[in-house]
Image (cartoon, rainbow, N blue to C red):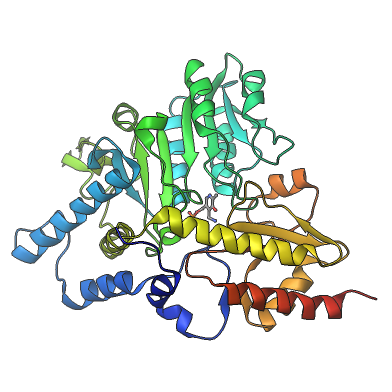
Length: 402
Ligand code: PMP
């Protein structure tokens, strides 16, 4: 592993050669040349599908595709590649758990506990399955620190609680709940835990075995990989219990007009031609990441967020919603609408996000209609922070009456 060098890291992202300041990595990370090359090579040179044909290239692709499953297993310290199901991303993975695991099991009156900090991807699938089964979604509220209050979990759990849905890291505040404690409490109450790793995975990959996580979902595109590919980790005995939601090629062993027999997991949950290019791109991203000191990279990103927060704090009306020294900085200015500010900042070449960040209940709990959010990645620099602050000053000069 190489020591983290900000300049070397940044040089690998061709998108950064263009003018502009990219502060939206929590929405999606830029792609390093290694991922672009692997994807380009796949489409330029590869012929054939996976798991279908005997000719050499199809066999080679199948081996590469399956090896990527093992890479994901290694990233998460999963038991094996067989615990990894390919999905389009976090959203699909959580919906898959809701529909294939929870739906056949939930009874009217059962409870799904969802933290108030969740992204809609870890709330709406549970609301949907609750509507389908007569179960109830119950809120685990935020604590005073704006992080899901795990100390209150025992008060929220009842004998009807079945599932706990919890994010590893908030996409708004950057807050990380005490997953280990939450999982311990949930398991002591015979609950199954779904961890949304979409935001956390790039900062601190979770050790699913050490944490005893039941289901874990993440998206490749937030981990420098392609869009349209992600993964669901599940404990073997839980994946075994899942009823496939998509039927078609490669998820079966035998089919007749009388019925069908399904494959073993994970293949049973992956009907149809998969996103081979996505898997190969994600594999390249993981290979590339293996050479980077992620802890040093993370402290670089956090340092930039601190720098930005310190500078913006000096502007009147600034409020920060950042917790735990995260590399995400959500903020607003009293009396300034986030939409006005983000429009001006976009005009000044700053890419950031504003609004409710697909987390309306969290924003309601924070008591704001929306925020601005800058999210720093290791390819950002101090000059990005300076450009942000200068752009904010220009916008404030227009938006705030003296
Ligand atoms: N959860 C969190 C915390 C997220 O930040 C996101 C992406 N914004 C998602 C879930 C959904 O990820 P995707 O859109 O890649 O499925």
